[in-house]
Structures are given as structure tokens and as C-alpha cells.
Amino acid sequence: MGTRLWVTLKYRDAEQGLAWLKAVGFTERAVYRDDADPAVVHHAELDWPAGGGVMLGTHRESRAEWPDEPGTGSAYAVTDDVDDTFRAAVDAGGTALTEPAERDYGGRECAVRDPEGNLWSFGSYRPE
Image (cartoon, rainbow, N blue to C red; front, side, top):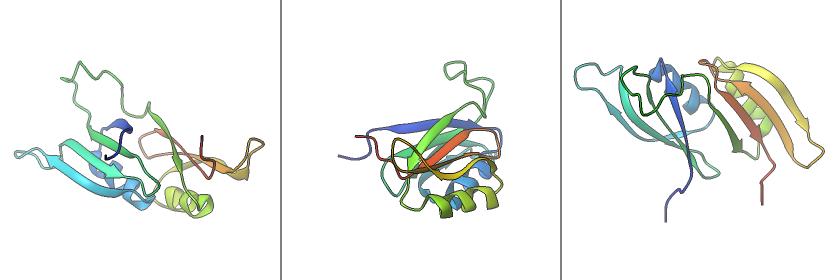
């Protein structure tokens, strides 16, 4: 059946975005680069170990049909090891917003901004 829900993000520096996402636990599924400039990522797909994934590309002003600016996205990723994921995210250049803590509604959670400003929450809570 495959993954049915994907977070989509744009990065000014897609290489840095790919490196950060891999550091926190995503695995590369596919990366399609520009033949003339390999630093430009037209499309990339990464899988999250607990399911789901992220698609990303290099921000290009010419993509009017996708107007969101880099650094304006947000995502929640389920993980069994919130503390290790938080440390990996910060060690890879993310900015800590909320340290790992138990939540009233269940589970443990933290929040980090990636190097381009996208908000990532990592938690053990699994929505029904």
C-alpha cells in the first residue's frame, strides 16, 4: 500500500536539510537533482522509521504553485526514543524549543526548529 501521508517542505539549502533529516533518523528513499547544478534538489523523499515520510526540494522563486516560504513548515514525528531524537536534532544544528517532557495527554514530547526554521515535534504519543 505504501505511505499515504507526506509532509512537504522547501529548503534554501536542500543539502543541509537532507543531512539534518538523516541525522534525526529519516532514511533516504529518492533524491532527484538538477543535472546542471547538483546542489539543486528538484524532489527528495525520506522515510520515517515509525511510518510516514517527508518530501522536500530546493526553494525556487519560479514555483508559484507552491508559495510557502522555507522555514514555515511544521511536523510531528512519532518516535520511541524522544530523548535521543532530541539530542540528535540539536547536535545536527537544530534549535531546541521545548526539552523532552511528559505531557498531560500522554506520551513524551519535545520541539526543535531545523536549521531553516521548520518546527519539528518529536513524541511518543501516537494519535488514534
